[in-house]
Amino acid sequence: MKTFIGCAAINFRRGRPSGFQPEAIVIHIGEGSLRSIDMQFNDPNAKVSAHYCVSKAGDIHQYVEEKDTAFHAGNIDQPAWKGLKPGKAPGSFINPNFYTIGIEHEGFADDKWPDAQLSTSAALVGEIAQRWKIPLDEDHVIRHHQIRFLKSCPGNVITIVDILGRVPPAAPVVSPAVANVKTISSLRLRGGAPSLTAPVVRTIPAQTVVEVSTAFVGDTVNGNNKWYSDGTGNFLWAGGTDQP
Ligand SMILES: [Zn+2]
Image (cartoon, rainbow, N blue to C red; front, top):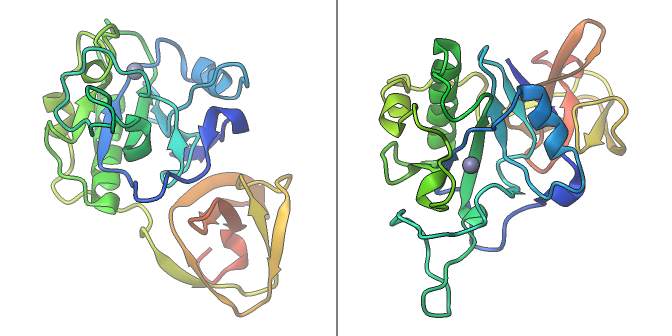
């Protein structure tokens, strides 16, 4: 199950610099529990985030939307990844956060990944690759260690080949990347989180066709906790549409 948690505003950047979009996926180990990672990314002093964390039980927490920039791989040290984009100054590099998606994993560097964690992570990698047309190979799905040598991240057990080998042949799309839904009643568009406490951006009239992307688990309304993202950081409750 994918749950949108969000993170402190200072720990990510809305959007990506002009001309950048996700071109690679960076695999991390969180060095802690899922809960400790939730707390870290919501701590305004942490200045770090990732787009996702996959738990040992196979649950996915999302902190940053894929179109936004998470702070997970900005420190470059003796890099081995040949996909790094050079900067203007000789020997410099463009911040890899601008064109990557970061996936954290619950646990520690020496942990063996439970089957549920590995299969969920692989399915998520497949889904992201499909969405952004990222090739599923070791040049585009990489270890954090390949950007920051000092970090063993994602640890000493898991390999990229392990993950790539578990990506479903045709990655199942849990919900369409982009679909049209129609509001059945007037519906409030909420900013920042799939929650009734998130600020109202605007009210969408009934019978409006809205283009939505990923479905998220959010606040439960009338027994339904499914929300759609409009792809620009806003959310609408699926129960108010023709595809609840
Ligand atoms: Zn890392």
